[in-house]
Image (cartoon, rainbow, N blue to C red; front, side, top):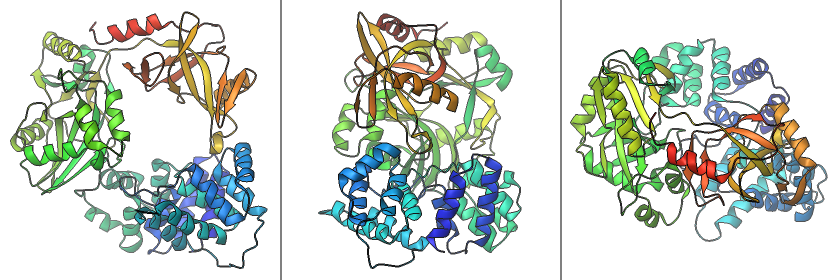
Amino acid sequence: MKYSKLAELYEQLENTSKNLEKTSLISEFLKIVEEQDIKEIILLIQGRVFPKHSEKEIGIANNLVVKLLKNASGATEKEIKQTWNKTGDLGITAEQILKKKKQITLKTKELSVQDVITAISSCAEITGKNAISKKINVLSEILSFAKPIEAKYIVRTILNMLRVGVASGLMRDAISTSFDIEKELIQKKYDLTTDFGEIALTLKTKGKKSLEKIKMRIGTPVQVMLYNLAKNVEEGFKMTGKPAAIEFKYDGMRMQIHKEEDNVIIFTRRLDNVTKQFPDVVKAIKQTVKAKTCILDAEAVAYNPKTKEYLPFQYLSKRIKRKKDILEIIKQIPVVIYVFDVINYENENVMLKKFDERRAIIKKIITPKKMILDCAEQLITSSKEESEKFYSKALSLNEEGIMMKNIESTYIPGRRVGSGVKIKPVMETLDLAIIGGVWGEGKRSKWLSSFILSCKKGNEYLEIGKMGSGFSEEQFAKITNQLKKIITRETGRKVYVKPEIIVEVAYEEIQKSPTYSSGFALRFPRLVNIRDDLSTPNKLEKISRIYSSQKKVF
């Protein structure tokens, strides 16, 4: 298939905000895709060359794209950066730069989808000496053949920033429409495989009946089961029934751990492959899990190696981001693994077994090892008093709260289920001043879309984190217009402003953090309201008080 056809689809998708129209565009497009291309094209429509769970990385950042464009177009870096500053989008920058290309090349090849895939994916294989220059050469050549509109989307794909608004639900609906299959069946198979390409290929080549042959596979992540929030234990029992399994809700990182003989692969809740960042977890699984093959649902919790006290998630996030000096950071921030569910045991899908039966499998296959790996701490009870005591114990150990689960419930991947709940303290909102922001990209390029938040200590404004969630388009526009008038300086895409705009912010937790000048960070901050009625943010003392009290019960 010609890449220009895919670029046309991208353009159509970007130019509509209507999901039904996007669904129709993709479903019609899939009908003309050849079977040998369909898996890769479905990835490309989602803005990817590799599956989300792949460890492969293209390894090209914004500054290198500027060099690519310089090589492919003959424009100067200054011209490219000036265009980038105006557009806020390197894809649009590529399109505009190539429209006024200075060096007319004799190359006239028409790009195919396979040409683009081969060039971009080959970058993941280029390592060692001069790797960057080799990648630049490969991608510069592809861009030199590209039409301006093709260059726009090639660059966005390289940067994993396609921005045409195709989330997994929309892709599911498009496949459902294209092949005339119930979307529930598509979703069920996607939850087990996280691979729309395989589903579409099966439908295109073998038909609906063959979907039943698509099974869970060791090494390919499964969508995790999620739980709703309950206000208290009493409400929790209404959801779970009695007795219920009460477990610690650990303040860590969810891990889906796949084991097949000596091969161990670790995925996050978002299905990212983090195996390389956690060789200690790989070692622990090999030492403590007796099953030859299994998929475990677990939580990794960071702890202080000297005091053995649990550390908040903020510390663990350093390990997720670290790509170098991994053995050193393991010593600084070790983790203990708590297993709370199993979804595959010896190549058998055990999701439909009752929760207490799955728990029995966990007890059977792991050998607990202190501060390395264990079952999640659990209490089976019908008592409100015992449950609240267990909740108190969890919070005293710096855990997030508790989980309450129906002991006869099955495992339902990819859903928030009604058979279990999570309970944790409700945090009061904060009123914070915006002291800076970052210009957005793609559809958000005309707005500031990430905001630096601050509290106050004396006359000082101290940073406490960044926020980009909870905004409507109208709120982005409103707050950007307000902030434009009070900008004090700009550095690249970042701006600094007078602390005149106050926002009400909700969050999951306040954590200690060396990253920000306040010494604290907000976990998952999101906008509640723009407080036009306020002119002063909360003080640092209030932040400290909430931090100290958040682990106390009732």
